[in-house]
Length: 113
Image (cartoon, rainbow, N blue to C red):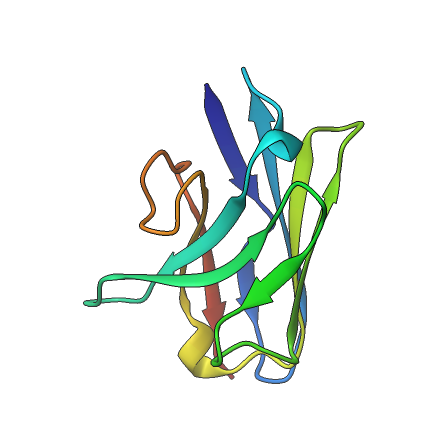
């Protein structure tokens, strides 16, 4: 079982990024999947959930700016991030639980001018 995130980088405030999470060893659509993040010096924070039926949920801090989706054929999950703010700076992980257990290695997102 492996999760590999990609797509992070440095972006200016107001910009956009799309993160990807590719799974191997299991099907992403078989259970709820999560994006969580960890800002410098802080704990893990739940960001978003996608269910097997593709229902999506977001934390209040990103609601209206982020979107989550899944490509079943590619066994890949995405996090489209728009209107990025400096407070979104963090390492972003895809995970099999909202607590961040069974997560990938993460991808760094830095929002700065």
